[in-house]
Amino acid sequence: MVLLTGAGLLVKSLIALNNVALGFQRENALVAKATVIRPKVEADAVFRNIMTRIADLPGVVAVGATSTPPGDLSMAGSGAHYVDRIPEERGGPSDMHTLHTMVAPGTFAALGIPLQSGREFDAADTADRPLVAIVNAAPSPVSDAAEFVVPIEAGPEHSVAATKTVVGSMAAGAELIAELAEDTALRSALDRLPERVHRALTLDWSKVSDDLAGASAVFVASRGFGLSSAREIALKLAEILRLPALGFSAAELQHGPRAALSSKTPVIMMRLMDETAATIDSLASELRERRIAVHLCGGPRSTLPWLGDDDPAIDAITMLVPAYRMIERTAREWGFDPDRPPQLTKVTETF
Image (tube, rainbow, N blue to C red; front, side):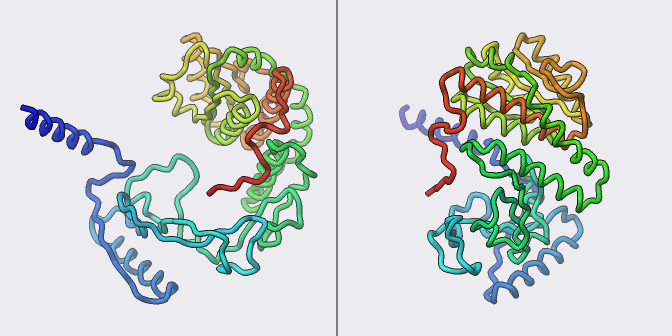
């Protein structure tokens, strides 16, 4: 009876394991192993040719290549360096050894792996592409190693939490996109950014801090351009106020994570005037009906002081400012140093 019970449990476990979501699609996927013993440049050309020929076959939807297929525990290794000890030439002596997996364009699509953010690799993402660095101070080891440098010129960052560097880096990235895309509307919005940031410093979001005092956790949500800002605000809430804080896409908060919301988990939401606005408005209304404290910035139903809507790419930057001010003031009220949070340093070394 004991053996029979054990066998039954084992079979049940195997069935359950077979139904576990692995993060990629196994159905209709064919995996083949190929080894090319040639110099790297020639080998890369061979693999590109193989992938092109396979992609042309009837019925093939996507083709990819990786050095380590999902489920394979073997990984390749290479060197890494401390940022202040970058070698004069790439490929020089290494300070340490790291493990990595090489992935070719199309691999995520071929395996059905969804992207949560960012973009797929493409054929232009090669090792010989120019290095571009956005830096707060130049010269520096990073700027010296880069072919192209985008200085934000915001002056020394005295706060370990680096709020000024975040705002400056986002603005510099927007400037770069505006120039490359010849986007006159974005250029015009960037011209308005300094004045809007200055005005945003006066916005009082203290009603948020009133809810933080008794909060068990805080959720910050947005979509599109605002998602990175939502995650940044959540990070600062955790680092400076020492509160469990999570940044989510508003679309995600409509599903699984929503189960964690309660009267003790205030939600900060940022609404931008673009195609994502309807989702934010709908979610805010639904959460209020559940008696969850919602603090909404932006739009006609904004409960937080706001300047009025502008270009969504720039508003995502501007909305950081009153949030930072609220976090700073709350930290001082709670007896915390907002400029030097515990366990946070300018240089992070991970082993």
